[in-house]
Image (cartoon, rainbow, N blue to C red; front, side, top):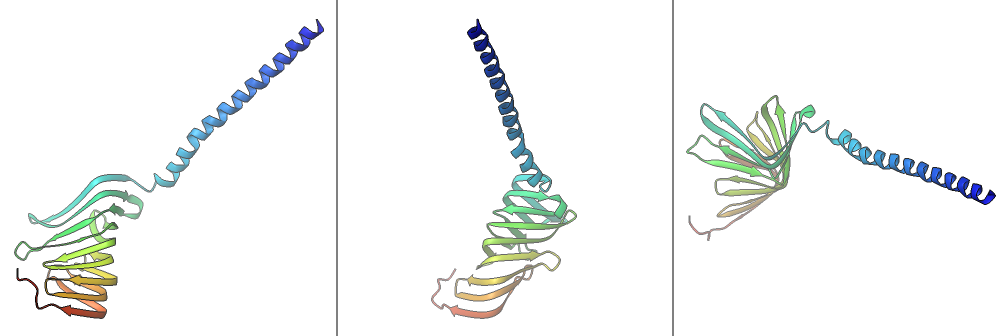
Length: 195
């Protein structure tokens, strides 16, 4: 009889211990499931108000398209009045004879003034195209108020008959005037094919 009571008491203690362990494990698993997602949401979600794929923004004045920005992906940061873009491209539609200019990069940020574009900064493999000239640099900024593209970085310019390198540039978009700021080196080619 004593053995039966001892076995029963031992069985009750083991069952209670297993029940307690199961309860503690289930609470721990439930807490871990919600924890990382809540922490992730606290870190990222308040800043990003909107995420957009195939982003496109166009400025039209008096029925004429002035500029267009496209990107593969965009994140609107409402608090900072900024849009972070991936693979952005900005096209300028010039008044002179339907000509275009464009600038593109790997990533960038668009600063807004309310709903209007204030500036766009592009980074990584930046290319600026003006007529038959192609400019390459690592970073460039377009300032809408001055209609000016600038870069403090090394710039390489290639055209049909010339190659120019320098540090720092300023490009007036509408008249398409280009100025290199320092350390300028030019190579002219007279044997370029006529177009």
